[in-house]
Length: 238
Image 1 (cartoon, rainbow, N blue to C red):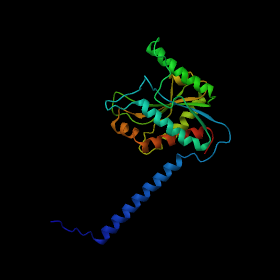
Image 2: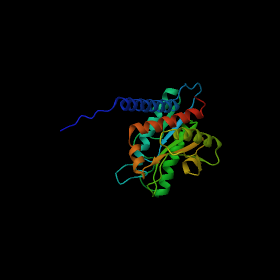
Image 3: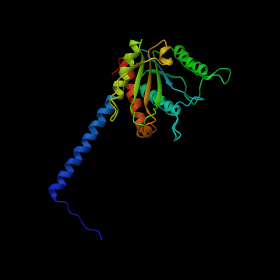
Image 4: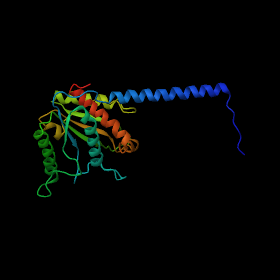
């Protein structure tokens, strides 16, 4: 038989007050986060961004036992970033908008094949007269403990460093995100671009919790908004 449990009035009021305060706190946090990630103005000058969804086609990037492919997440994220940048008037071009690569089918070794693919992406950016090059990736490690987004720039590029810092400073505003800093690197793609370039690692597929979030639209939106805001800040847009 069910028993009726009566909560004394004072306790009920206290519980209600704590509940309301909790909801209000969550709303304030949500408004703060959303406000920090929205491009609020329209670009008067022409700015061109090359978004490069890493890997694709024959090259899947990182793969998990659960069948999650890095190349698929990279493409979804590039599409979302473009959507958040479009209202600002920033022109966005992508190295790929489907599951494809730019390497020859045969006649070269794997390393050369990869370089041909990367060189094609760099050439596309140059043809588009892109002001910046943003390559989107997802990380993986041998340990399951690592997590968080990271942004890399070439150590010889001051403009690349500023771009990376603008993006990373927005990414760490995402609730629960590790507070990593932008880091110098010597990746092929950022070493060989004529324009400022960064590589963004959105998180770790080797971390079960982060792997789950990286596949969910609400978290992808948070990442995309942060990256779009960082790019807009680089161009001087509030």
